[in-house]
Length: 326
Ligand SMILES: Nc1ncnc2c1ncn2[C@@H]1O[C@H](COP(=O)(O)OP(=O)(O)OP(=O)(O)O)[C@@H](O)[C@H]1O
Image (cartoon, rainbow, N blue to C red):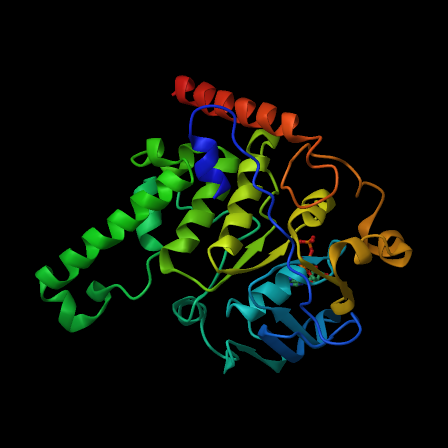
């Protein structure tokens, strides 16, 4: 796992991680069938007044891959996320996750079934410590049930297991030095890492990330990208919304484009993102900006390995500087 490699002394070794291909059946067109879909949505619609925020006829999200959901501001991406995860209710439509209907299932039950999400604006609870935030991410806690809550021995043993898992994840996300700090004291990037780590507390099968890079200091960009790639290596499916086209190109195996509530294009990143219609209409002029990140997944990464080392060094410096300030 790349993040483990980078925690050892000496320059980290870049482990190329192949893109997953062969995800769809037939032509790569909006709503195309997937070989093994984890989410299947049909006729999902949500309006606000006269605005058709989501107007999706059919879409399938491939299992075991990283899918990017892209599109201009107001395309309906976040609203679609909210509907799929039970944080909002559609006017109509049905969708399944792992072949079970999720329509009408509230958010906390969606998480128990293995689908978790993060938010565009992080929802870390500032007045709780990093560890307490992590513990809140664990689902199915025995102490939540009335009768087991009366038997402290039962929930205390589970509490220990939860704390151990939380601490392990915090080490992985390099937040272990912050365990007892209030979440409010973390930088924007560290809060994103905390939110991602907390999402993993429930051992999900599908992780949905809403703009994971928004507001993140460039020094932490590489680390976040690596963590997202790690999720896939660990067997999870990832669906993420992102405006940063460089990131999409690097880490997505599949790209779904939304505009005005509809799915307007789908395909592998290189095809979709070189389609002039998609570029003109949806991606804008800045899609070629290079962040200097390296994932071993797109041509030219080998040349850029030096910049990866530089960024990681800067990232460590930034963490040290923040540490000294406190
Ligand atoms: N709660 C709401 N009340 C009214 N209108 C809403 C609400 N939520 C979303 N909308 C509208 O629905 C449309 C889709 O918004 P949404 O936030 O889903 O788009 P988005 O693709 O996620 O945009 P961005 O990339 O800017 O986050 C927009 O026109 C937005 O103004």
